[in-house]
Image (cartoon, rainbow, N blue to C red):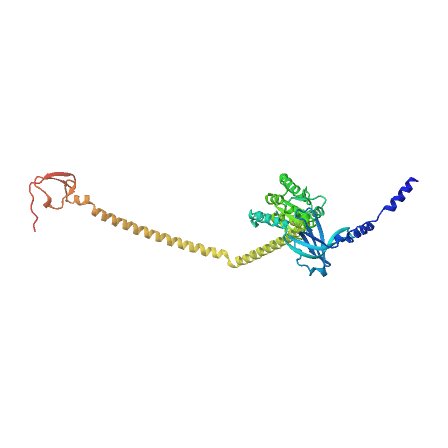
Length: 412
């Protein structure tokens, strides 16, 4: 009896989801303070749809954010279009989107309020890291063509991890995947990503590393603009592929990575080749090689056939006989020429020997001539001699020494 009464009381107070949403919608949309409200914030993301312009306003410290929309018939009235990184003052009213139970700001007007603090911080950090050379193209490393171990840094609960696994299994069955889990959203995400990257480095097996997460709001991607994450990617000795799904400009992690793509699936496709495609290419190369080899063999046989035909036409036995006769005649000619030259050389040597004998001073002395020396000098004139001076005279056989007793003047 008591249980029945309790169930009756509960059933009278239970609201359906639609009922609760309608009640909250009534409270929000009938509150006079929320019918016309000015809000200032920084645009973190902006997307154009068929129904209108959707963007997010965020506080500089990212402590709060609100979704905003501008219907198509109001867009042309805006003084300033929402651009990510710009600070805006917007005028609108609070509305509740029942299908998702989310409140949002329906904007009528937006005014510029200068560059947002988050955008300024992003720009200053990017300029500083770029000046250090962390984004330089010459730092980019080439990915290995056939890695055997691929490292992955992402959240184990994220859909990106499932996409990467399926893509790797489909493209390269049997590949070893080294998973290093990390938070990829929130305040603790930067430190978690850095730790996950270092974990893969210390393991030492991975030859390429994927750092990835799926798509989401721009605010969810802030961890990939954190300086700690960027420096960890830039200093990692393993080539890194950044597969960060987003719809805005490149993150700083994208700029520091060796390869940058915009989805986890594309990152997995960059990491490994498609094994079936490699097999097809191998089959094509095998066929091309067989075709080329067969062509070479046919060409060689054709050349051999032509040479055999030429040999049969040449009658080599007769050619050999002619060559033998020619060589024999040349040998005889060479012998006769050599003998003639040797005879002429012997005659010339004999003539030279006779001339040398004629010019030999000793032979002249033997014919009765003598050589007169004065202190080791040959005497050629009597004018330079003195009475009583001693002279050496060399004869054909022997030497004598004489003393001058008389000098006769030379007759004119």
